[in-house]
Length: 213
Figure 1 (spheres, one colour):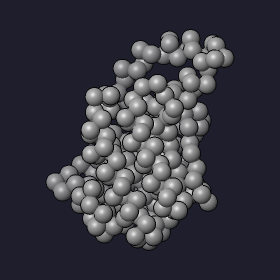
Figure 2 (cartoon, rainbow, N blue to C red; figure 1 turned 135 degrees about the vertical axis):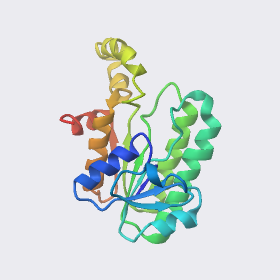
Figure 3 (cartoon, rainbow, N blue to C red; figure 1 turned 60 degrees about the vertical axis):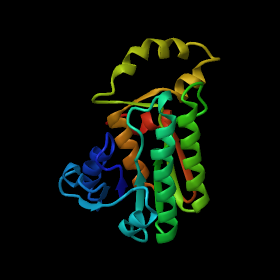
């Protein structure tokens, strides 16, 4: 089941997963059913209510938690708490109640010198997931370049420069850019390779998994 199934990553992920013969359930808000990927099972409900999320889950499911504030920036700290954190709080409580098998969660690269409120909320999300005891895969991109999200291309020369120096190379790799196809490929890999415990996928591995995407 995918929450945030009509969003920037969600719709493409649903279509790709369905094309790989996965049974996909898209959890959407009431009124957004027509925005889901064609052919997937659609369930509507409030993603901030544990009961609604739990009713949409089945024992043994993989839950892909994609709800988040669109175009995050430092001015949206309150939205991060109200949307990003509240949704993963409901999702983890529901997952624990139902007894699902796997949680896939998009966090954020960390540590980082900026976006501290966003990082704090996503780190809290990671902690909530770990506390469930459910197998989990946590992906940590910094920025996903794609349709309508292309301005970071202007930073490519700066990234190249930072990679030339040993002192700044680790940060430039950890906080590197990934593409939309790379992210979808990494999410598919996360879905298809359930870990025994908690697996964390950082930017270099996201790029490797999406090398041919």
